Image 1 (cartoon, rainbow, N blue to C red):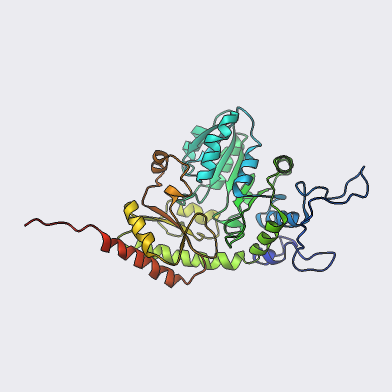
Image 2 (cartoon, rainbow, N blue to C red):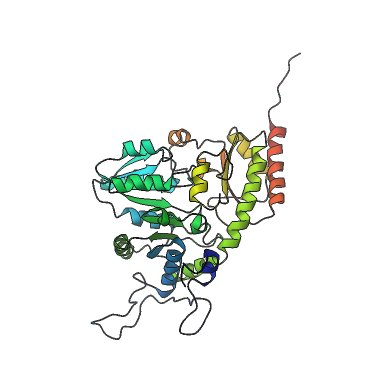
Length: 394
């Protein structure tokens, strides 16, 4: 199927086609770990499932097509994809990372890669001058999250790519929040796009997976070697489930994004909410940049209450969203970054980045938007009812 002929909406359904042997419209699930060889001097396409599996390959081809890359790679988790990709670095190399980055990535950089002599600096990716000043002679990778997790900060992708190319750096971009339906980083010059496919791509809170895609054949060869060497590959069952989840990505993301926009406008009008972070709001920092490089604001937003006490009160009185780690599912998920996604980040580092004890992240699912708003309204009303009353002494 040609990307030039079909929309992504259609490609989501038909990109991997049907099984050529049987005509099955669902890609077969190959549980085999090893494959019979007719000749030991020349192996067939598959020999051992860590190195290649037909079901996993169908998924990898699909994500490569959706992102517009030359090759895709499926891993056992989003962090497995990120970790393996970072192994293209060597001792003495330096990496620049978005200051506000997912807590698991922060932990990998600061507590694992540094043990192997890989240097790092965190920068505000929204400030291209700061990024330019932070580039060193040994900088090999600039790592981007846009929108970032959890404050939805926006990075000018083309601006970063220009800086990277001028300084012979690679660019990695976590595209989990946007998916290839809303943002195509490879078309903007990024070298490697990464996904926690556990989230929107799978979409049903039942698959743990990570994906990487590149548009460069040389980078693809390096990633293929690392994927096979480290072996953190996605199993065939989860590959099949992820392929199935991808078929409904378009309709899921469309409805969730529409609901998120409606909820963001509801929250910004509430006195209990100090600030709303959502790329669909015209006053959101980086709004114009996001509109230029993405096709929509997505289905994730964050909002700030005054303190942890208000968070606890809201959590006690909302019923529809599950209160959990993760995002991008059919059910709405309310998360508390300070003790969930960014718990591995020291408190002073979280607060310096704006990840305060009053911050909540909401991934909007497929529930009725008005019912979600009513539920959130009930939770916010409870904050006022539970506020300590001022004691007047007579």
